[in-house]
Image (cartoon, rainbow, N blue to C red):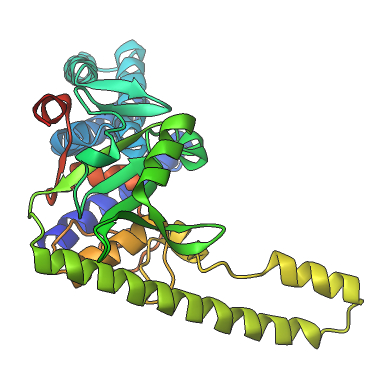
Length: 337
């Protein structure tokens, strides 16, 4: 409830400030220009300062960086505007104080950047163990890998895989691929492929899985894969029957069947942040296993106001770096492994 209240309040505050700022720029508010600049800059300053602690900790998330840099740029410009406009000296003093505060926040933000290093297309915490070998990974570990999605988002990672162990003792990686739905691949194949084409980082559960939980995780993976294949076959059968009845040439029908063939991946969840019961995104599948094991993670896909709407709140893999249920594997872990 606390999480939902905080997220709802900050969302409303940001939307209100964006609307208010637009009205001011568009001339919709009957204020003196310098007074309006001081007020808008001050409101952005207060809201950004309240969120600053959290945003610095989630610097690896591109949205967190934008939530600092955009208000900071806008606030500085408005404060500078208020300082040069020929109005009451008190307004210039207020603008100068705001500009000093913004400058201090910028210094803090720049210093925080030193805690991160660029890896691929985005930052990761300094000291991160990059691409640990499969032998160093344990059941329950979450792998976050680079790839095309990470490049498009300008982040270090954009895909997730969970480490499991099958009854034969072989390490397996569970995930959901856009082209294949839920898959269970040998871990060695995943780590070697990622090492050749990019990089990956590993997050370890703070709650160490028991032997019973490791066994249960594998059973859940098999049940999920069976449910995913059943959903895929059911959806494809329904779509093909529908397309077959369309008054189109056969060549068009064949193209539609190929184009709209379900793979088992949750494309809507990719954009909306939902977790369905029988088809998933990559991190959605991992979250489902953690949930069924009773492992509490952060709230994901809750939507703009934090009440489960999933609206504009995709589950971005990089956000797991700030999840208190996990510990990032670092070079210190590498030296002791």
